[in-house]
Length: 147
Image 1: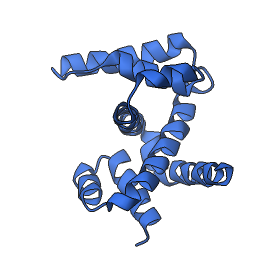
Image 2: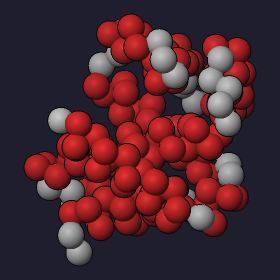
Image 3: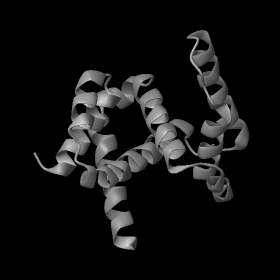
Image 4: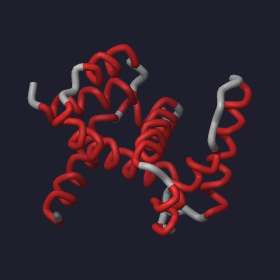
């Protein structure tokens, strides 16, 4: 299996709730392949955000979405940094200056959390994950062309 196919399989496993398989693939990911995986994760993050928000990435829509996640985490007794998630989402939605406030680890953690959240809570995403991954791969190709 090529590195790209492994990245895709890892994200498919994660998005469909097969966490053990996703973790197994993550553990076997070579350090030199991590950046390419992160690019595909970032692209899938963008695709799923577009699907979820349907064009309304207003601060109010983002805050409401983050509020729902915060309540779920609080109900489960889990820590949650709402500002980081909201800030990353707002930066993604056009407030690029906010990116300066977050580390690369914050960005990756938020992308992972949101991809999981949007995939697990939306049957359409789970049932048609390959279409979303195809869109994400097309975005990665576009990003690579721009470099």
